[in-house]
Image (tube, rainbow, N blue to C red):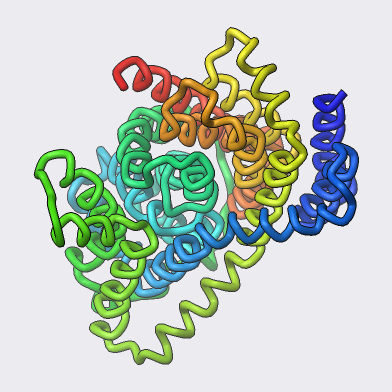
Amino acid sequence: MTLIIVLLCILLLIGLITIGKVNPFLAFLIVSLITGISLGIPVAEVGKSVSKGIGDTLGSIVIIIVLGAMMGKLVAESGAAQRIATVMMKTFGEKYITWALMITGFIIGIPLFYNVGFVLLVPLIFSIIYKCKLPPMFIAIPLLAPMSVAHGFLPPHPSPSALVLQFNANMGLTLFYGIIISIPAMIVAGPFLASRLKHIVISPSQTYSVDLSNEELPGTTNSILASLLPVILLMVTTMVPFFIPLEGSLKATFVFLSDPAISMLIATIVVTYMLGLKMGRSMTSVMGVYSDAVKDVTMILLIIGGAGILKQVLVDSGVSNDIAVLLQGLSINPLILGWLIAGIIRICLGSATVAGLTTAGIFAPMMGSLNVDPNLLVLAIGAGSLAFSHVNDSGFWLFKEYFNLSIKDTLFSWSIMETLIAVMGLGGVLIMDIFI
């Protein structure tokens, strides 16, 4: 009976968001309260579960997400993203432009939240379309696919970062594994798919243009280093202890620096100078960019907190034990099961972040009983959360409207791109699981 209650409450969550158009945070809060009471948590104790759930979840993740948003916003507004794209195109030439755009999208996509990055890079996409006289989808897909990959697979993006902490995974290892799995996923969903979408014709607005001149852009080294600095710090502090024995104060220093929040703070301070103060911006101007960045992710933080509430209710009610017993009785690989659950929720709700976090709420309470690498489970759920974006996803409409596409063409470009990423991601996870 308890499992039926959980299923009905998840269906209620889906209905509130999709049919009722209720804000996802409010939907999570309402459903969590109903779930807790229905599962037998005393009414007087439900409030404590709510407070603990949102506090524990946001307390461990808010710093990473906020600092990541700040860095991403500055990378875009300083012109660093534009500089990276320009250098890549010159290096690869028009013949291999899709590969240049793929690498550009991946570098930019690591620090930049997807919706923000999409809006900020659309002018660059149209600028390349006009300059090179190439089919729009041939340019757009290779740039956007790796950004979507980064959004679903890699910290410091919201869903993978939250999953890492909920599953007690290692942020650096998840990032390392995620980059390996990302490469074939973005190749297939980027240049490979783009070469088959040249027939899609659009009439983009002539008002799009890149605002910054070449003289106003930051240097190439600064642009690339600033974008990749969080990745470099996380990977170095994670991998060094595997190769060099550390003791005493040196070990303590590496433990301190390997904390994702500390790595992100160091990266943010360095980038503030490299792309802000060094470029002639005042500290007030840089802080203004950071304030706007925080506004961009406020709702994301609330949704993550709401998902944390639902997870805590499942833990406090004891139903997680019943779910664990059920899953242990299934012969299906937990990685595939996590991918399937995230994919179903994604298709029903539209939001990759909500899909990933809702699935995490189901799996987190029973991680101790699952024989699975937590880093790979993060990536499997992240891949599933990207499956088949369609009309209930804001990203679907962003893509459709900016490129003036029909619903049919959007389904055959954007939706296929997202699904390819999901399938390739799962394949990469399962292959990696053989060797880990």
